[in-house]
Length: 558
Image (cartoon, rainbow, N blue to C red; front, side, top):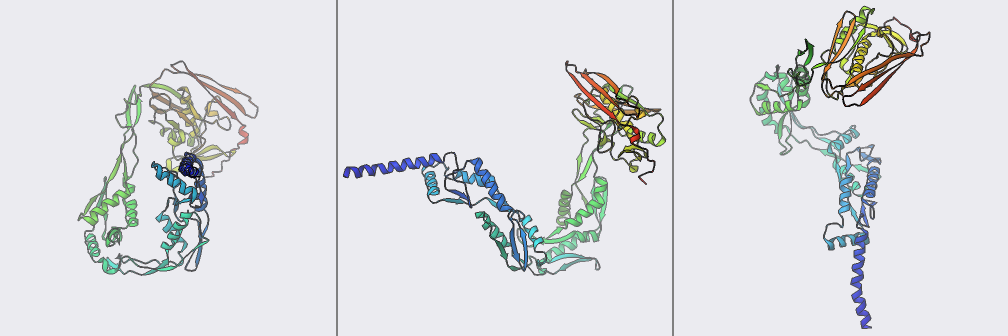
């Protein structure tokens, strides 16, 4: 008998040890058994499964409607709408770390406790204060009467700074709602409703707190007019404007009154008086070929930008912290990508290809539009690898950009519209791109055969934003576009660095012609690379009868 008892006594620790080691082995690649996050059981789940379970549970919690009551008003909001955020990754990391500290005895104890008694973690939760405040302000707008801090105000009648006294208020208790949300998030279980009391809302600043800032505000106003300079622009800020700029708020650190600039008034002045004269985009230099040499015909220009936030910071420092009567605002300078001296390094050395068309017989407005549109493209540089978009470079088309009404194909009719004739420009650009062997990424033929473009199949129609004419510069160097008009002949020339490619065209071949004028056409571009590779691209065109697009000369623009 003593021997049996001794054996059991010796065996029990061994069994316990084996059991604990077994628990650790089972938990080795899983969330430890018995672990919960709120009401969600994760025990035995892999990390991937646990992440999915948490994401689902958090989503349910965040998007479940919750009833809020306060001051006789009842509203429904979800925790997500109230700014509650639960970090799935951080919560999962905490769950995974349970029982994995690296200390054997401590880890075994944690795993055994979870298995026997259960272990519950609180999710990693935060509330976005701005979202929380804005949503509840909207929810309880009808009954909330927030306290009003004492403040400085510009009295337009008296023409001076005056103090406005504080006012106490009453609001629905935000702190109680916030605490209830955090408590619910800890368990991931929402209550049926949250009932909040109305509480007194005390102002943070009293009228007697404004003495020092009032003195400072009067000193600032006394310096008017203040001259603001930004680049070459100069504007004056009057006494009235300065007075409207000044306001107060409690110092976040001390609670004392501090003088600040009103963002709305300052931004309004800057956007109205300075930004239009200062802000501009950088302009690249534009070039042309003359007698075999590249020359600059449109100079590059730096871009400028007045950053409102930085400008306000400078104004705050100089107006409220100094005695300046003249303040220079920071203007960010953006250099152009292509400067005036960049022609040589761009690799513009020789004519790559040219496309031509003839607009003989065009009416006066069509000729005018062709000339206006063509001018947009002369001197354009296409970067290596860049996709050229005809419509992007063309820009807005209307009377404000110099165009006149002329016939266009639109909605099964041929009608007058601003810019009629621009397809002549697009067709010519398309031909130059094809002769240069460039990959065409977007091109559409006209709805019916247009006599100005000669043999069908080598035309391109555009109508911003689509259809567009697009192609890619795959030469490895910049391409300079140059245009010219001689008589009724329009020509697009592409200059750059030849890469040894040869271009062969098959067609255009017209087929399927019918008495009503409808037809089909095909054109194939075959590009033979210097390395021996061959690339082909075929352009199929389908033209309907022009009779299907009757001319309506009533001007829809009037």
